[in-house]
Length: 267
Image (cartoon, rainbow, N blue to C red; front, side, top):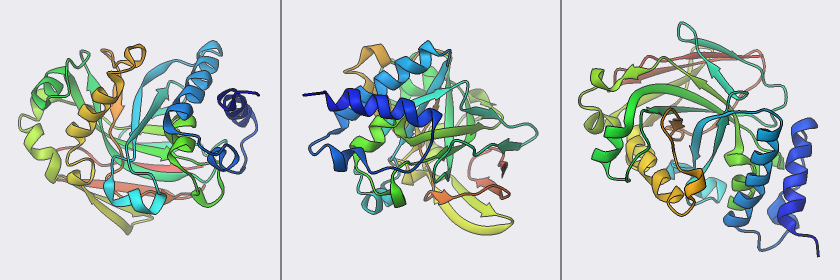
């Protein structure tokens, strides 16, 4: 019998060339679990590396417990961010091309830049490993109709990662009370100047810093994927994820933490 992981990986690679909706992998391969999804993602990752893609960091997904029940996914996941998926904001603005993304949604997040590989998931150790903090906006996407999926579909599809907009880094020395401030930070998410959603730091596993620690713990059993100096880690959405379309401009604004907001225009 053909290995479902190989079939899923081949399909994911083909979807990169011909994006479209299709039935969930978990519906077609009963019993598919998160670990099998990660094995398919590893094959997709290897294909991308061979094609010249360069990983620049990670994204963590489903750290926001407020959305677990709606998606039916009850634990965090992770995926790679690449040089071909990252968009650097200039003067607090970025333009994002949606071509190739299926059912895209926007997620405002907090991102860390690492100066060293974290030694443990202890908050003090994590802070020692961080060089800077930035606001990031991830665009996730899903090939399965109406976002009906299970955790294996998410892990297989590289954590549903589509794009990551990265704002200006703020050096850790400029945020001396970062550990205490992160749980209470608030973000407002607006479309065309109209308020759509608000989120707080505690939504993300009680703090974006603890979300980073959770990732460190997840990767302990997989040292080949351990975090390294120079990587970025976007820690998961502070709000719900909202559908976006070409022609829209979305903006964010922070309070409780000295991070500049962003505006993102979709094409």
